[in-house]
Amino acid sequence: MRHFSKAIILISVMLALIGGMAVHAQADNAQRNKELVRSAMAQLSTGDPSAYYALFPDEFMMNQGDTNLAPMAKADVEAYADALMAALPDLQMVPDVIIAQGDWVAVPVTLTGTFTQPYSFAPITTEPVAPNNQSIRWTEMNFIHFDADGLISETWGVSDPTVLFGQMGIFPMEGGDTPAEGASMTEPVGVAALTADELAATFTSGMEARNTATLEALVAQPLGTDSSAYYASPTISHNSGTVSEMTSAGSEDPFASMLTVALPDLASTPAVVVAEGDWAAVLLNLSGTFTGEASLGDMTLTPTGQPIQWQFAVVERFNSDGKIVEEWLEINAIPLLAGLGLMPGM
Image: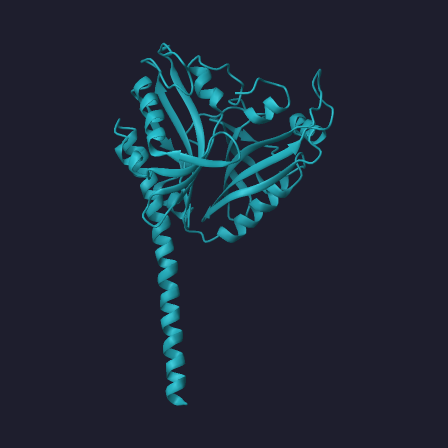
């Protein structure tokens, strides 16, 4: 019996060690994945995209402006990036923050460059687009899943393509760079103003569970609901590249109110949630059926009875009280606006 007891103790210790090793390995992979993203973007910004390309296997899964994943080839990524870097030779790809948890990385990115060379990429334009020699700036939000070998197996990107291609003169601009409220701010503010030690501490607070629960409760609220209780005042908002100080987050939004009428079955489903320390990010799939006649200003929107699906992404930074002090918002509104008849489909 004593030997049996010793065996049970030994097995328990071994299981604990194995469990600890598994957790440690997962943590190592999370930090490894974060560093892979950081270093690849830094190298691309020097004009060398090889480390960025090396993250992709020959085939992986990716969304393409909608809420569905589809097979994608590494060659397609290279063709798109090569065309962009050729047109904007000084292209910079700078992560605002990188959050990693398990096999997932969430990263809002700011991209800048000067359009000095012709742009030619067949899926976007049939003829080369002449450069306008203008500075171009746009933002993206990416949720990236890595496999055990450190390769991307799945990636979700949310961005408004009219911002990039509108500045290049390819597509008409559709807003997306003006916050609904608050004065525009000059960086560095928020996380960009933290010291290295202060920034490091935001990733080690151990508040993942609390912040994930808060974020999930926030996004579960019906659209148009006053959500100011979740926010500190003021809150720094990064809305599609524009930084502003918000003092009444959650106030009534006429567009949101219109959507609740136009899409009475409106629903949002978290597709990916990533949390690390004081940070939490969520990718939302939104859907509804355009069955309600709604008004937007002087416009009356006639229902089509058709379903509409689009995506919304947000990254939140929480303070010690569990309030949001800074957030990044990104939306590809084209499927929504096209479905409502407010712009042509693309």
